[in-house]
Image (cartoon, rainbow, N blue to C red; front, side, top):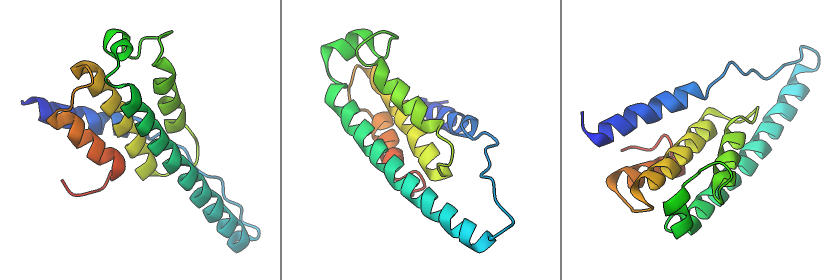
Length: 139
């Protein structure tokens, strides 16, 4: 199995592992009003999360080629561990949509791939970057 196929399989497994049995409670009284508020809240939350994804991607781009990242990667206590923690925290946020969870999972995988390659662009990093920006896009 080639490296890209392996990464695709790992990415899919990581993405599926992120989907817990989270449900959003619904109310039977005033269901239309409640559902409308719920949809508005989720839309606002998704917009905020999307901006977090882009912010984290920019942050990753800012340090992926640094000597400290090449030396220590995402080692706990290291300079870049907080980035990985932020991504994992965002992934575990309740109420975010599947697309956002997949995008954050791909972002985490992109960071780990940069760690493996010493910040170098490869076919794998380009693939993950594309999936971060458009998780359901055509390949």
